[in-house]
Image (spheres, rainbow, N blue to C red):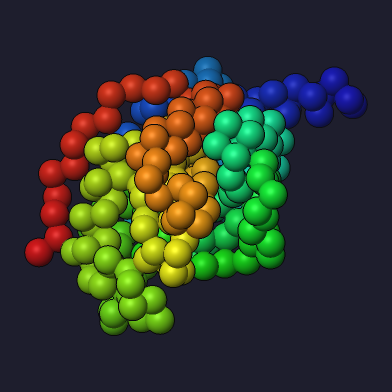
Length: 267
């Protein structure tokens, strides 16, 4: 019985690997016939296995094309696993970065239109208390801008449907979606984002993206400090932070490759 269950599990994993393949990602899903060819099984067997997986949310079937793709439940499990692993991998690197810069380092993720701090580490007598678990607006923060690096203009329209993006933050350089897009392009170009007293008076900061094994931005390393201490070396801090974020990304399985310039611009 156990051998039979183990054999069935291996077959299910083969189907999931096929649905996670480059071919499936390009096509947006695969049909039963193609999946049967890839895993070397009969079409009827594959169809039954896929229906069972779909009932559990592990895969999902497009109602129009009838093709299958990886499902919401699998992505939810992976997301939780990645976030837990992210904290474990990032913490020692954050400690080193905090010691090098003698400033507080934050590990941040994107939650809707806010930046959420998962972990804060300080290597200085100055400690930014109360950031862990706290959400702050995306547009006026360096972390928010790098967390949006994978976004397209259409993504921004959906996430920020209207209004003044600087509301409540009069010093923010981002008031419109065009402003936000421009700041994102700067972060793509430089490998990090910077803000000078846009979120809070006398506070400056830099952030760099952390990518997962797919190359997607899943978090940001942020360094925030009083302007009198960090303001004159903000770009140096940005480059150092980007290097640290790159180390975390590599440990998350990402292999760096040249980034093409974005061609779409907001009008």
